[in-house]
Length: 280
Image (cartoon, rainbow, N blue to C red; front, side, top):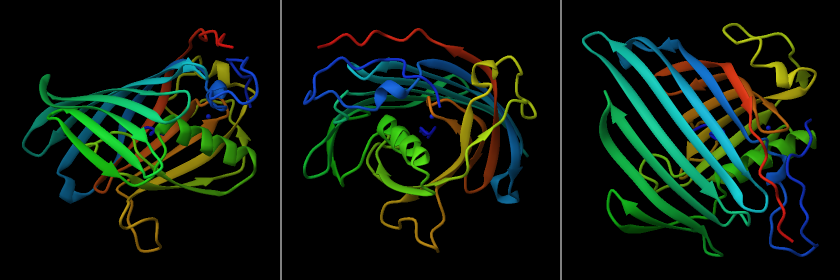
């Protein structure tokens, strides 16, 4: 996941025009519609992983506004060489979170060497009892999960915590990943804001132009199995570190899995035209 995963100080790109008391949720207006490309390199791998070489690319696109909701499209391609094989994985994800932050639709297709391996598709609804998931692929079924927030809401919560000067934020999150049948516990650790005008190693100098003179927060988000939680003894199933800006854009990523870690550097950034938020 891309913190969004994976599940980010910049001007609001969508101005709320709704009267007080509207059901439109505050917060989405701070997220900048954009398309970012990150080149991935292997940072480290354990002997048990069997990985000898690995590289890839992430394409991450955010569109929408506070009136209509937020859409995230995410493609994560890796080329992997092991001791006895070479192959490519390709995960393509599209999600949408409604403006009231109560409904979340998701579609993930996973390919191995261009062959479709799996499809996960469904809708999650936040209720007073928890999160109700209606899956339509790979088969129709319903899953009842504990209370959680969705990915765009989680990103906004992290940004707002950083702006308040908080160091730690814990949230339970549903993102539709894996089999879309569990909520994960997350812990976000937030560092002091800093300005990083010079490109990091492997980063494109032109790509970071829109972020110059802006400060961002070093953030590390760890994700745990819900039944384990972020206790002192718990090992995260996934961890992401990055420099997060107040408009939702991130750079200088490190993605840590149990057996290996990847770095991701921003090589292209396109700010997309904001969709007018003109509902009354």
